[in-house]
Image (cartoon, rainbow, N blue to C red; front, side, top):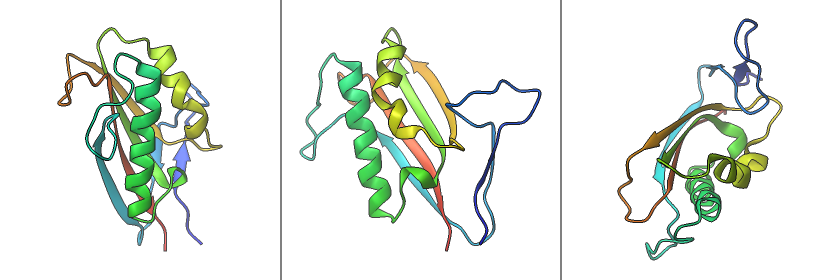
Length: 133
């Protein structure tokens, strides 16, 4: 059975937290998860002012969205994580890192931004996943 290959090439920094390249074989179903903030099912912000709590909730919302499409964190090819400038990145990543740890981790793009669409939101997480038949 074909599998998604996640590669950490020699000559690039080696990190257990992310891969540099992903190759998705033909026939995989691609799932895109739009930016998830730390909001509950009613749209209320969770963890106001606490980036660790917000990171955990945003990731949980991404998990729920992936599951609705039949995907899991193991199927994620690319994570994009946006942080409001000035937050404690160690606290933010510390709250979610263990859930993203795989032998071949996904690609990760992180960025600091001036603000997010949800007032008070400190983090937003989106994903691209590929599910093999």
